[in-house]
Length: 319
View 1 (cartoon, rainbow, N blue to C red):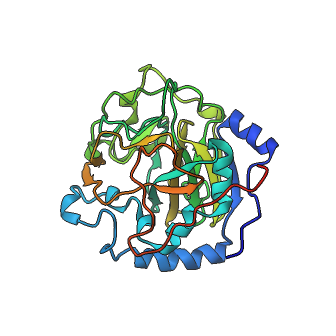
View 2: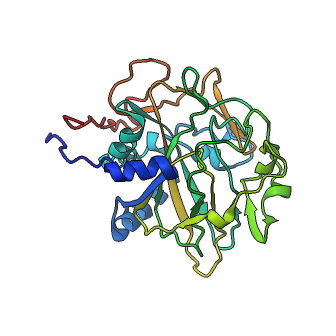
């Protein structure tokens, strides 16, 4: 097997901009025709849940998206995707040489759907009250690096992401509070003239300052061609536009979340509880995508449930 010598790390200028703004990109991973073909095939294959890590539908109450987390653990294309050097090199340049992918999830937006509300995520404890990731020591807060890839075109009219640059260094929300799942009330709420929701929750329940409002005058819209991806801190204020319905195509985003191996994933819990559903972690494993695990905090997946080995990325010499 020929060693990979190309280094896709952020340039010094890109890295400085990332630390200032909290995001970098978009970068091209697939050409539009390539991702259209790959995603067209993959979305049909994902209907087969017999090897999915959360395959027991009876254990998933509410019939929601939590059942479709972590499909990289049973699907070849998604397993390759999270280990692509174009992604891993950039993430490792931010987090350091030893990196885990601890979760993947799909973010579909159909014509007419509301926009996703402004939010930040540090420990991801907001839905269940239990931290899903914990950084070591005296870290003020941590978060995760999210790599959000457009599996279809993502324009403003189709509901692309929005960021407020530079907001990743301070949290406006208290994740030790508990949000209440009420899709009948929170699915689509008009906020400052925009239809927004948060998967059945109202993120305002977590505000530290009850009068806080994101400064949308500073927001930037992250339009992407199909096959492009963006890298950002989960603690960055982010949202998405509504899907205006001018296009009949679904906007599909695929998010992979990365942390250093020093971070504890799902500490002290055997379940994921979100969006009105609960799934067990008995078949779950984080994926070591780069370097080594010197801590042993977390259960690791050596390969997908269909026997596809994960390709760990080594850092190029001298980096």
